Length: 175
Ligand code: BGC
Ligand code: CA
Image (cartoon, protein in one colour):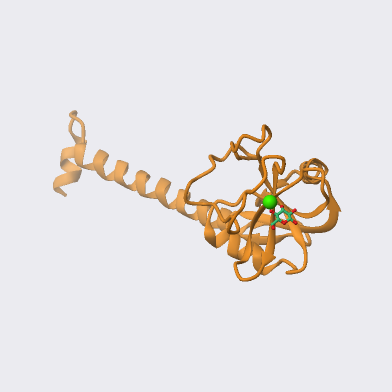
C-alpha cells in the first residue's frame, strides 16, 4: 500500500526499480547458468574418438612420419596431442598398446632443445614426462610416448622421419 502510493507520485519509484533490476539480474544469471550446463552436457566427440575433459582423442595405429601424422590430424580438424596435465597423460596411456609408440604434438625443430607444442602451449617445466636419460640426441627432434620398464609410460625423442603410431586431439564439439 505504502509502495503503491509512493509509485503513483511523480518522483522515481526507487524501491520498485531496485526490485526490477534484481529480478532481471537473477533471470539473466539463471539463463547463463542453464546455458552453460546444457553446453557442458552436450559437448561430444566424433565416432571412435575418446572423450576426456573438454577434448576428444583418436589413437591411430597407422605408422607414419611425424609431419604426415600431424597433417592427418589437421585434415580431421585436430592436432597431434598436446599434453597439459598428468591426468591427461594418464588417461591417454590407459588407451595405448604397451608394445607400440605414438607421436605427440611436441618437437624441437632446430635441434637446440627448444621444445614446442603444435598449438603453441608453452613447454612447462612441470609438465614433462621424459623417460630417464631422454631427450638424448639433438638429431631426434620429435617426441613419441612409449612404454619402457621400469619407468612405464614416458616420452622419448625420436627421429621425425621414423615411423610411429600417433594420437590426435580436438576440442569437443558443442551442440
Ligand atoms: C631410440 C632412442 C632412445 C634410445 C634409448 C633408441 O633405440 O632410437 O630414441 O633414446 O633407444 O636407449
Ligand atoms: Ca631418444
